[in-house]
Structures are given as structure tokens and as C-alpha cells.
Image 1 (cartoon, rainbow, N blue to C red):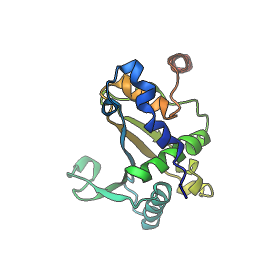
Image 2 (image 1 turned 90 degrees about the horizontal axis):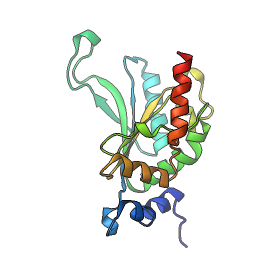
Image 3 (image 1 turned 180 degrees about the vertical axis):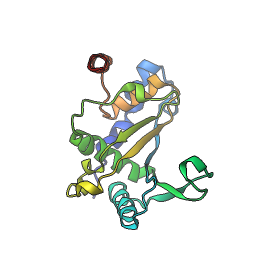
Length: 196
């Protein structure tokens, strides 16, 4: 019995065929790939041990992997921060766990985001990576019954092997990440300026 591969995995596998004409690839190794996905959240000055335990559990539920604590690298007096103090949690996903998370993120979670109109292509950096801020973790199916006071946000960083912003954008569009068109992005920016 063969297991069905996630749609996102199939899209990544076909990236070479889809992009080779535009980027003049001569062999499959030149094609960009998704290297890893990093899910991270900051906990600031949360002292409530139950809330911290909940954040760790929810990140584990969402990603399928236990998060690791991130300590402060140096003390900053103005922020009352001491070196070694836990300031956040992070999960790094690769392989099957990464594919499973991306599938859920693209096809289930993002469409559940309130007033979602797509992601800005300008969020892709020069290294070919994109970081997406998630204001409420309750967009994921594992956490739909969460109480309002327990809601927290986190960031999802998709790290690619793309050598340029254009190449990364083409890859991310190909795997189904809902990036805005240039026209839609411009309209949104104009609407924001008018509100100001």
C-alpha cells in the first residue's frame, strides 16, 4: 500500500519542470527548494507558568514537534532582561514534518485568517526567504476551541535555496502560497495611504 504524498510535496517536486523555462535551468539541481520552515514566538515578560506551558503545547500541537526554548544572549538593563532568560520558543521543521505543516498552513490555516487578501511579495527578502506574521494561533485546526485570553501570535519563516527574490517568488507561487499580484499589492498600499 502506497501512502499519498501531500499536495505541497508534489508541487515542490515539479518546481524544476515549471520554472526551468523562465530561469534557464540546465539541470534539476539548479532548481530552488524549500530547505526548512521555522516557527517562532516571543513570550516577552510572561511570568504565568501555565500560559508558558500552554504556548509550548500549542506550538507542539500545530507543528507536530516539541519547541525549544530561546534564551536571551545578553543582558539589556533598559528592558530588564537578563542573559539566559527565556524570551521565546522555536520549532525548526524539515522533511516530512515540514511538508505536513506547509500543507496545513497553506490550505487550511491561511484561508481561516480574518480579512485575508493574500501575502505581500515584498515580504520576500534578498536571500529568498519569507517571514509571515500570524496574529492569532487559532487559525490552525488544532486550536479552534481556544479561549480568547489564551490567544498568541507567532512567525513562520520559509527558508528556500533560491538565489534571488524573483526565483523565490516563483517557487512560492508554484507551491500554492497565496501571494498577491503586483496590482493587488499596489491597490492595498493606495487604500492605506488614503486612510491616513
